[in-house]
Amino acid sequence: METLKKSIEECDSVKELERLRVEVFGKKGYFAKEFAKLKELSGDEKIAYAARLNEEKDKFSELVNAKKSFLETKEYEDILKQDAVDVSLYSNIVNVGALHPVIDTMDKIIEYFVSLNFSVEDGPLVEDDFHNFEALNLPKFHPARDMQDTFYFKDGALLRTHTSPVQVRTMLSQDPPIRMICPGAVFRPDLDLTHTPMFHQIEGLVVDKRGAVSFANLKSILEEFLRYMFGSVKVRFRPSFFPFTEPSAEVDIGCIFCHGAGCRVCKNTGWLEVLGCGTVDQNVFNAVGYKNSSGYAFGLGIERFAMLLHKIPDLRSLFEGDLRLLEQFK
Ligand code: PHE
Image 1 (spheres, protein in one colour):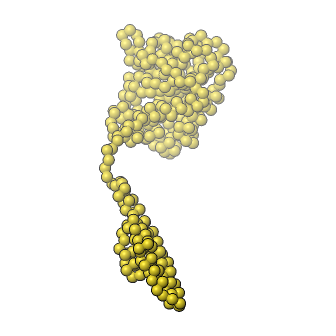
Image 2 (cartoon, helix red, strand yellow; image 1 turned 90 degrees about the vertical axis):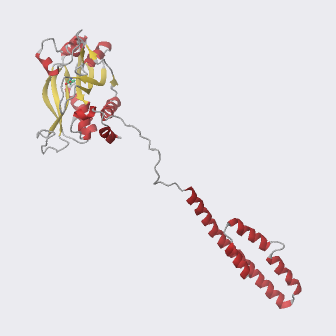
Image 3 (cartoon, protein in one colour; image 1 turned 120 degrees about the horizontal axis):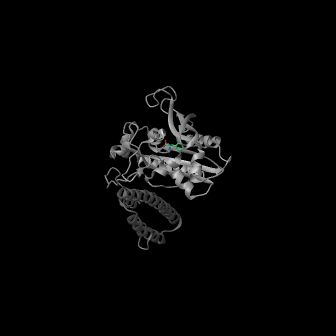
C-alpha cells in the first residue's frame, strides 16, 4: 500500500493517474495479485486478509479521487493562465471621431420638435431680397433692416441673415396647417466673443386657421422646450420687436451658471437670452397670400445653446477646428 500511495503522489496529470488506476485494478494489477493469494489461505486468516484488502481498495480509490480533483483544478488553472490576455498591453488605438457640438445640439433640438410632429424644412443659403426681407415685413430702406446687415452679391442676391426666409418658402409652397422647423447656417458681418460671421439657427413656424394658434400656445411649447434643453430653469418672456411677428418677445432663462446671483456670462442680470419669437404679423400672411390664418414663429441660435450646454466661453473656438476642443466632445 505504501508504494501505491507513493505512485499516486508521483502522478502529475489526470491521464497518468487514470493509467495508474487501471493498472492497479487490472487483471495483472496489484489487487488481482493480492486477491489471488486468498486461495492459499483458509479460515479466519482468509477472512481477515480479505477484509484488509477491501479496506486497501477503498483507501486507494479515495486517494486516487482526491488526487484527481486536485489535478483537474490545477490543469484548468494552467489553461486559464495560458489563455489570459495581458490587459496592460498597448493595442492599435482606433481613433473614432464624434459629432461637432453644434451638430449634436442641433440634432437634440430637431429631435424634440420632430417628436411634437413638426416637419423639417430646408432652404437655400443664398437668398433673394424678397424671401429674406421683403416678405417678412422688412421693406427696402426700412430702418429695421439695420438689425440684420449682411453680405450681398453683385446681382442683388445675399447670404441669408436668418432662417426666417424658409417660413416664407414653406408658406408659398404649402397650404395651412403648417408645423415646421428649419435648421441651417446663417450669415452676418459680426465677429467677437459671442458672434461669428456664420452660425446656425433653428426656425419654428406653426400656422392654422385664424384664432386656432395663439401666443399662449407659443409660450407653453417654448417653456417645455427650454426645460427639455436645460432642466428645470426659470423662463421669462420679454416684450421685443421683430418686423415679422406682432406681438414679439425675446425669451430668457434664469442664468444656469450663477442661478440668478449675477455673473460675467449673464452680465449680472441673472438672465440669459436664448430665443426670439412672436405671433406671425398679418403682413407676412399677406405677402404669401394666406387668408384667415393665425400662427406663431420662433428662432434660436444653435451655437448659443451649445455654448450654454457645454460652458464654452468663446464662440469662435467652435469653428477653429482645434482637435483639443473637439476631442472633449467624444
Ligand atoms: N429671425 C429672428 C432673428 O434671426 C428670430 C426670430 C424668428 C424671431 C422667428 C421671431 C420669430 O433674430
